[in-house]
Length: 207
Image (cartoon, rainbow, N blue to C red; front, top):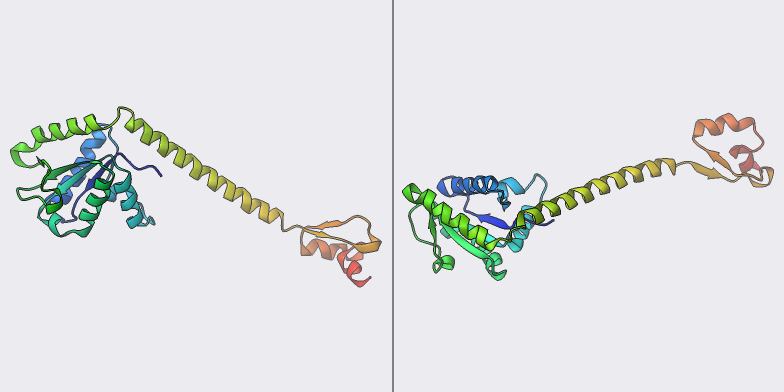
């Protein structure tokens, strides 16, 4: 399935970093920009490793949320590597005052905390809009609709297949020389009712 154009990478620190990631997702929704956030996009039963990899490897922009916990989270680094290989725009966003992890130390960060927050967010949003095609949101929605339509069609085909299998349980019985025309025996009770018929399966078996 096609993934949103913006990927939000963050450390699960149970604190400012995680809270900022959720806030960014909500702000982007308000701006009609689709974004990948694991807590929203990974559904029960999904393989989260595959989902994270797909999201990071298909994004055009990565918002890399930085908090003290970001420095020792292997998955944060893996997501950065995936986005960097795609030449995606990577924007570090600071949830607290602090230093950037080594892999993004040379990137200009946005300070999304305290009095800097709103003005810096406007700059981040401008960068996102600049690097996303105008029809990116429409493309994602169309891909999502196609995916759901295919899923619905697959379910309908499975339902028809189950019905066909039940109908297919009807057995075609050849009655041998006594009955030139084969019989459709729907169930055992019908076969028993035909016991007096010279073309019944029991008679055919005896002849």
